[in-house]
Length: 278
Image (cartoon, rainbow, N blue to C red; front, side, top):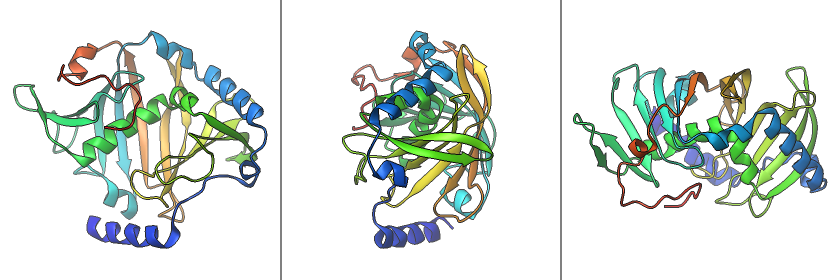
């Protein structure tokens, strides 16, 4: 099935080219100051300032793949997988330990964009792995998203929209330009007018294919250590007309439960921070 999906996606990529998330309001390119203010209000509502006092964290996490499209793109051996994610915030260094399924107790890791697994003795064995390189940083970005998106250097107001009965305002965020770029993603946030919480986040996936887009709904918020996190993140894709392809779930969050040194097993590698190049 995976090979069929790869062929389908590759054909779509050639036909559709580079996707553009911008609403009609965002395409007008106005109200950058309004977009900036809205993004700051969102950040305060999510308690992002509390990330600054955290050296590491662990998230008990679950991902369930729901449809042909979702299951074909899954890196796991079963449809629903529970895992323990460990990260250093503001970096892309982390580990994914399988809690359930055929890989239970196995650990994937990434440090400075170098991927590894842990052997039976708990030693890191570095070897390039595309699934590890994509999924561990992706999960981290969703967890830290309200903080991470503040790094975007171009913003425009995206207008108003009602989503699941909630009145929202939108912000289109990217880097260098809000217009489509081959190697830089766009993010379009829809923020509850009253609570300032993210309701829906649309995004491109340039790392995989230029035409590919997704959207995640932020549902059932819960507060941990002053940080507001969604408990459920059902995900849509433009590869599927209706319904969700998978649903990510944050089951628990604990700050400073793991020594950051453990998440950087190769002391010879430089700390790359939020840089997304190897």
